[in-house]
Structure formats: structure tokens, C-alpha cells
Image (cartoon, rainbow, N blue to C red; front, top):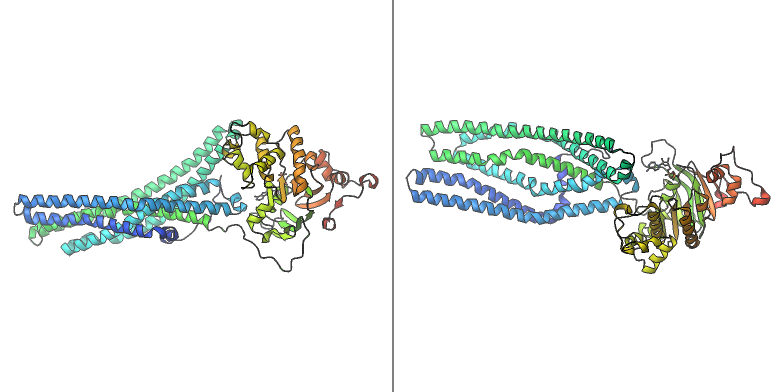
Length: 614
Ligand SMILES: Nc1ncnc2c1ncn2[C@@H]1O[C@H](COP(=O)(O)OP(=O)(O)OP(=O)(O)O)[C@@H](O)[C@H]1O
């Protein structure tokens, strides 16, 4: 079940919504004009009762048909003017608000690209998707409708009450009486609704995550016949969302009923009092008609406050959810070079590197500790270790997908923490065991490794990766590979990922078991071609099999997050029981195997490894 990744914010709806100002600022003129036009249109409707009063006390009392027709014409013109103004308001806001939504979405996407990998490890993708879609749509609707109409309705109610008091202040007071209980009720409603709105929006995110996982994992779901359990899990989540939505509807129905009923009671009381005054002769019939028509004209502005507040509350929640992501700090920038930092030799050097995942239990041991290793210029170092020993983690530190939590990594003497990310990514290329491709053409996927690579470079990279199958695809390099490249086989994807890694002829190469999905024949061919590439680069290759290790000049053995031995394959085979076991599948012996100096040459380096790595 996806977890709630964010801490709840505890700010008021208004303070949350005010955070939208930087996005609204560029279109403020249009929004203010639209609000002004809407206020004008809404106030026009308040002129209608005044015309009615004039008609009842004038032409109707005097039995003047010409005057009644004139009054009807005024009413028609007012109606048309009101409709035109409301249409104009909509035209004014539609385009700029679509722009606000688009720019918020672009900012969110840009920010997501710059957030550290650790953030993406923590946050369920559905939560991010729902923030970038549903929440932003809610915000556009809020800016277009509730925001304007809360202002318009408040202005209309104010003007309406001025007119009511001008006609008869005692009846005006009767209508004003419900204001206090209504304000109290609205504030209680707002508090309760904010909680349930947040819950519903988070549950939409959870549901999105489940849908996304089942779609991406459809092969596993089908392969293991898990339709029923997946459907049950989905149904349970959607029932929870349904219950929350029903809770929202109940709250909304309650406040709507009260907001409608209480003013109706006041209008009823005013009607009785007004009729008595007309009977007494202290009030004209026309004034009573005008008074009641004005009161009725104010019904919609008052009644709509319930759902306008509900929509505003949902928008405040959407704003909080949007900024929860936007407030997360982007990847570390460039650290200042330390003046006292000792010079590092050329090549790729790990010096006292330590790493702990940000979400690790406090007090738990680091995933990597005291890593000291030098990969000399032009050398290929294989990284071998048992499952979970930290190989992938170590390779992820070189392109700074994670930041070291201790020590440093240098490339040709330069600390990677002090390098601009763009330069680092030019120097270092990576290929992971899980080859991720994008829904683009084969050529575009390969060129992700070097945007400006020419035809010849792409052709060479494909040749190195033994990805000649590309030329047999229907449109060759222009063939679309489908979402995540799933229209290709695992081995084909892996070869394209390898081509992407080598296309830019990087100075440093990091390969995380890049040949695992290939059959032995293709693997041999890829290895032969890769050997040429590796001759020109400084590389670290995570290897699980002897055939991959053979690509390397030396091997570093990683055991429980530490480098326990460094040497050539042959040396380690003879001297290190764990290594021999990993490579052959044999039972590990009680300790390192004693090397035979005659047949093996110098013994493999054992812990500590510092001296031999410098
Ligand atoms: N994102 C993460 N957050 C927290 N811990 C993690 C994360 N990724 C990996 N780990 C932990 O770090 C340790 C090392 O994992 P890593 O993937 O580096 O091992 P590995 O040597 O590459 O394993 P394998 O050969 O199975 O791929 C494991 O104990 C793993 O549970």
C-alpha cells in the first residue's frame, strides 16, 4: 500500500492559496478585470427589483400599459447586458488560466527532474501523477470560478444589503440576523471539510499508484494469475475513496441545507412583517415587492457560498500538495572546492567513501563504509560481491545519483562534488542492469547518451553493443520502441542501453552488470566489441559472472559494504575463498586460500587495501 509521503501542513486555506500568487501575478490584470465585470453583471441583477418597484408603484398603480411595456423592455435589456457581461468574463479568464495551469505543470515537471533519486525512491509515483494532473486542474477551476465568485458574491451581498437597508432598515435587520450563525457554521464546515478533502485527494494518489503498478506489471499479474487479488486490492482502495467522497457529500449537503434554510426563514419573517407594514400603510406595496425581490436575488449569492467554500478548500489542499513537492530541495549544487583537500591521482578514485540511504534507520550501519579504491586511467575495474553487498549503490555514487555521506570520489583528481552536474554527466556514462528505455525512437533513445552524436557515432555504438537488430526493425533507427521499450526483448533493451552508454565515448564508464540478459553467444560478441571501448576509458563494471570479469584488468571484491580484496581475477580466485565461491558457485572455505607464489605471482591485495590502490 503506498504510504503518505508528505507531512501534513497546518496552514489556513487563505495562506495556502496565497502561495499561488507568483503564478497568478502575470495574469492579474485579466483576473481583476474579469472580477470587476462579474461584479458589474451581478449588481445589474439587483437593479431589477428597483424597476419592479417603479412599475408597481407607477404604471401598474396608474393602469398605464405603455409604462408597463417600457418597464418590461428595461428588464429585457438588463437581462441581455448581464448575460453578455458574464460571457465576456469567461472569455477574459479562459486562456490566461490555462496558461497558469500549464506553467505550474511545467515547473512541477522540471522540479521532479531535478529532485534527488532518494526523493523518487520515497514517493509513490501515483501521488506525483495526481498532483500534476487532478490537483492542477482543481486549481485552474478555482482561479476561474470560486475565487472570482467568492469576491463577486460578497460584493453583491454587500450592495444588496445597502439597497435593502435603504428601502426599509427594520426589514433589513431581520434579513441580516442569520449572518452570525451562518458565519459560525461556515467556519466549522471549512475545518471539517479541509480534513476530508485532503484525505480524498491523497486517496486518489494512492489509487493512481495502484493502477500504474498493475498496468506496468501486467505481465506479472497475468503470469501469476493475480487478477482477482489485484482487483480486490483495487476495490478496497476505491471503496475507501468512495466512503471519503460520501463523507464530503454529506458535509456539503448539511451546510447547503443550513445555508438555504436559515435565510429562507429570515425571508419568511420579513414577508410577514412587511405585509403587516403594508396593511398599516407604513410601507408601499412597491417597496415590499422590491425588498422581497432584492432578498430573493441575493439567495443564489448566499446559497452558493457553501460549495464555493468547499471548492476553495479542495483547492487549498491541492495547493498544499503541489508545494509539498515543490518545497523539497533539489539535488545538491556544486560544493566549493576545499583548499586543504589533498591532491588525488588521475583516474577514478574513491577515498574513504561512506554512504547511508537518507531513509535508513537511525543507528543502522552505513551501506558502504571506508571504500578506498583507485581505478587507474584507462583501467577497467570489475566490482564483484554478493547480493546486497552494495555494488549498485557504489556505482550510483559516481554520476551523483546519490551523494556520498562521507569521503570523496575524484575523477582525474577533481572531486565530483565540486563539478557542475552537466560536466560530470558528460564525463561519466552509465548503463544499469535494468535497461530503461523511453517511448521514443531507437535513435532518440541511443542519442540520450550524447545529444549531438552523429550517424557514425550512433552506428559505432550500436556495433559495440551488438545491436545490429536495429537495422532489421521496420523503420530502423526511427522505429518507436513503445512505453519503456517493452516492444523489444530484454536482451535488445540491454544492448540499446549499452549503446546509449558508449555513444558519447565518455572518459569514464560505469556499467552495472550490463550483459546479464544476453545469451552466451551475443554476450561473447558484445564483450569482444566492448573490450575495444573499455581500452579507451576508465571503467567500473559490476560483474556477476567470470565472462564479464574477464573484461576487467582488476577486480575489487565488495563484501557487506566494504572492499575486502583487490587484485586480478586469477589472483583473487586463488587467494580469496569468497571470491572463488562467487565466481564458481563452490562452498566458501573457512578463510582466504593461501596463494601459491610460484604459480600465481604476487598475492592478491587483502584488507586493508589502501597502499595498493594509490
Ligand atoms: N533506495 C534504497 N533505500 C534504502 N536502502 C536501499 C536502497 N537501495 C538499496 N538499499 C539497500 O542497500 C544495500 C545494497 O544494495 P545494492 O542494490 O547496492 O546491492 P547490490 O550489491 O547491487 O545487490 P545485487 O547484486 O542484488 O543487485 C541493500 O541492503 C539494500 O537493501
